[in-house]
Image 1 (tube, rainbow, N blue to C red):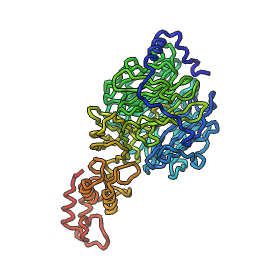
Image 2: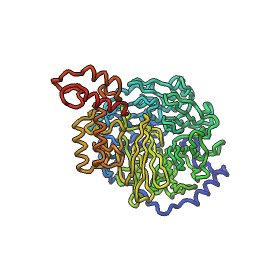
Image 3: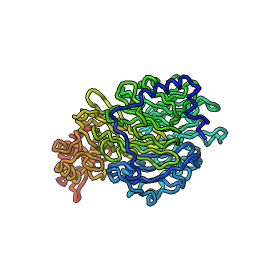
Length: 631
């Protein structure tokens, strides 16, 4: 049975739709793009998704790419097997996989729907969050070695609902991750249960802010996307509501701006982003290259006003809102769409558009920075499951050759692995971030990379984007033939910290939060052991790569470990030693601690003995004062 009772063949009675379809045929070639190759069987991914009519999931299942074992490459997680088994495939670093689902400790989840992946404990190992339809949201803690147990938040999401996507961000900037749980309200369902939830994480207790914000109005919500839409440093929220133009809810898509404290204001009224249609999946990224996030909303080709079946492309203008531009960019789509991604698949620095289709091949539009985008015949080989419901796609550089590969999930088919070959002739910069406190994945960070005269924007997002799954947390920047790499980059961490990077040559890098610099052995403070770690990194000339402790010693942001980092480490060590109360500041409280120990010879080492001479004296006071308000 077709979704909503409408097939894509319904474009017939719609003259506007027919004209758009004929126009799309003229752009069905894209010379020079090397086709994807489907290699799931040969690379060890064997996972079959249940067929239509599906027995669970309510409009599909998710797939995700994430580095579960912290070895620097992305693994693959998938939902939708008929027996409820979660697919878990570990990457050997070159795009070959081993199935570890049976030994992972993950249970059978017969009603699983969506998933998100993020480190909730701050230990560097990401957790799995899985939504279920009419069953509890499950949270699984990663204990290492690709094994999972129930997390402390397991069962903390409230009563079971028709849960769809779950999204994560630090909405109140307190260092831990909060959640938006999308709920597909079923008419006549219990009114107190079938509502969206905005869950603030207060030390492991989830507090639902949605009722007080009126964010829990009934709607058929598929997902919510966190993004810094007005570029003020906090995470805003865009909500995708299905059948927004229809009774009984008449709930169009919503745009909520965050004031920085986790209080959101609905600014949908009069905003082009508040489209009312069969809104399902949403792509998020800077498609037009103006430095602000844009959205592509998938739809079905019904002839209904006001959208008339096309996929709205919403170009962000910063604080001034959004502008409709699907006609200008030639991405008006006449097929029922589900997942959608903005991803630089041809390596030229501009984000392309990939859309999952129901009942027809998936679609790919290449972006060269100037409208219209170019429709690629047969999605460049990533066409999906013929005549089936292609729901979700995730992107990651799975074979570590520098370009973005795709993992695509459709009903009645094996999980499809599409390897990209655009990187064979191009170069890229890939950046993973290590954040502070419990948000070690730096969810909500923004990276701006300068290539020639262009500034490329990427955001680190967990859950929501696409449809029911998640792409890699590694930011990918195609260099578009710029052989000299990138001139510079600026990383805006979600807590307000900023790092400047210089001269990024092609390659993959790990960039750490400023508060982590110098702590090479990850014990939480700087000491002589960290100096030894720095010396070793300098000796071997290591680059700050994912999985390497040397990333924590790149003080000057030149992505090299050399003698220039040594004096900066010594300065950081001196400041850390003078910070006697470990609050990251050298101030009056540290002075009091030093004076309390004044003049008394110490049999054992004392933190206030800054010159290591065995007594607290004027020399130590002078060293403390040298660091006063240094940061």
